[in-house]
Image (cartoon, rainbow, N blue to C red; front, side, top):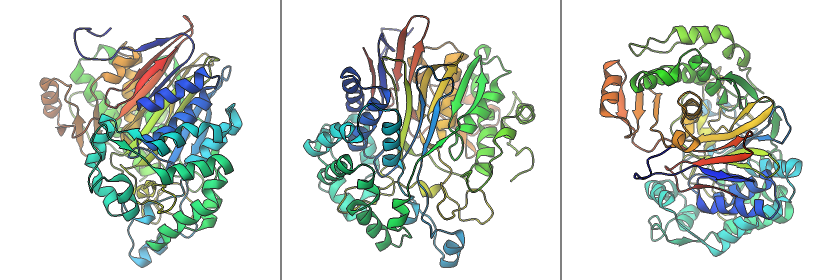
Length: 529
């Protein structure tokens, strides 16, 4: 339990239903849907749609979506890959022949957005309300306006250059050439009209007709290879989730093209260690070494499984676990190696994650993203759709698993998680923060299952992340831990930004209650009733 004389948050205990998001208006929307009789899927879609309006840096309908959904009584969650694909004309040979590189702000970083198709599939398969009904709160906020929250405003100010290069985006998201002030009311009338079109026509209102035509025309005018046929072909995919066992719980992730596999690999590395008994220095060192092992393999091997086989079974095998554990020296940092000899890299990006558990025990873990802040910064001039830059994750490297190819999904960083035990959902959870997310899942679960922290304490705990030759460490770590990491050979540096942000709802089956937490690094909250 936290010290009530110090600043902090308490976990939210609820008897019937709960929701946790990273924005207060998103949380409130989900609660309103639940209280009016909607289920977890209804609440989650309505909430994420609102966040696509009120938190435009982190997410949008021009981005992608993944979900894990555990209906009450389901022994295994349903996994949905709602990521988009590259244009049919996008070959690595074309990029090489034309000397074109994929930069974060170029049209070539835009894959066909998958979010709307994913929401529509979730609503049709598992919701109780139409997609059109669930979009109404988002339409209202886009039309009448929303106040800019503190973390949203801080991020907005850091990313103004991203939208400045596109006239339509600059006119929409800048006020007198600058970010809006915290507390200012912003309206997005073009986005409201597009959301209304989708509400009336369904996903075809986005992937066909005026909206798709507007986006494709804008991208092609900038040199993109997109066609209206590419948009019309968009479809999410129901996939088989992958899993490992940790401390008696079953941890489920979406399979590649996402990076959830890396989280499972790192948990397997930690399994034989008594993590809860380690000193803070030893624990952070162990996490850093496990992290390097997981991410080194991710960057070399993860890709769209439709076009390149990802050795999932091998990477979750006892042989790989033993190899990775054996590569860890608790006294010093070591360089990771690929095992076996099989020979990408992405930077911190922006995302929103939310989770919902309804009165019937259905649990939804949902994540939606533009990748970087404001994505590419490119906006459909008439539709008001801000476009993500997920294609920046592609390589232009023939033979590499993640090289760009026609109708291919890039290696994806956004990952929802689901914890289960004895065939029942225990906790939908997720941690935002670009490629940190796999490590974020590990830190969150280790805090809960190894250290005995409650859901809010586990989210509040200081974070570290070993990637790219450095270990970023948040300011909550004592200086002696930072110094100890450096003494063991780690290039430990202060984290330049808060690392990620997460949400979780713990289902206490014994008591018949829910315990929800939301990350203090964001503006959001957990609520329940």
